[in-house]
Amino acid sequence: MRIIPGCLLTSSKHSLPTFSSLRRLQISPKSLNSTNSDRSESWLSSMLRRDNSQESQSDLLSSADAIFELQVHDVKPQHMCNYLKEFECFLKVLSKTTSKSELLGSWICEIGQQDAAYHLWKYDGGYPCLSAHNEIYREHKELVEYRQNRNRMLRCRRNQICLAFSFWPDPAPRPNESNLYELRSYALKPGTMLEWGNHWARGLRLRSKRREPVAGLFSHIGELHMVHHLWAYNSLEVRKKAREDVWQEPGWNKCVMSTVPLIRHMTSSILRPTSFSRMQ
Image 1: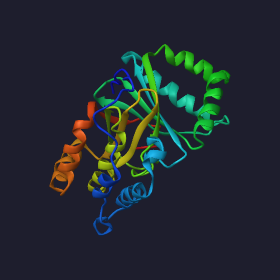
Image 2: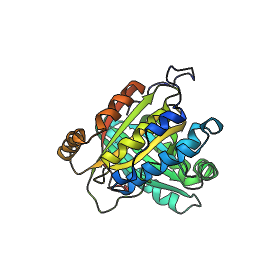
Image 3: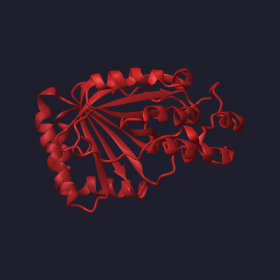
């Protein structure tokens, strides 16, 4: 995934949705048929009851205390095997410390930015948990040695701290499966994040008949105005069919037409889980 340079916080012609526009997006409970649909309906209903002018967009879009870190390591091709071995050893050392971090998934990019490793971390205790983890990461002797060895195998690395959209399923391990994952990353125009959430709270229920949705995140620190949607498929052919079939669902075309104008740039990457990933 190529993360483009951050943009300035400037005004945008896309204003935040009004109360009346939110009411027009309300979904009839009779049309809901899955847990994810219930989450979408619950989110939209809560939006109708809240005074949006008194809350930050982050509070409106995410309700959980947990934060997530998306790491991307650009590995030198000749070092990929050693990198994966070293990373697995790093996890074993980290598990013996007091860090409360949780590695949800690790992947290697198969289509997209090749030789890139992706890691998704969860910090249930929020920023205090992240700060405690980073202190251990900086000072633990074995972890310092690991970091020095690892850095020699990398071309560059980057990360973002993200929050989870409350209308998406909770990101969780998927053991005993065999999936390819697609990470779709969107750089949005400033001021459009809430509008994006409104449309996707409705559109996600159309993609929830299978267990495709894995995580919906938006950046909180790092490059801002970024959205990441993570999907799971058994194969590329299953992905192709799922994406074709959803166009037969009433309302999907409206979701696409409403969200495309909000996007400055987007990328799609196909990821294969590593042997130690908790999302398989």
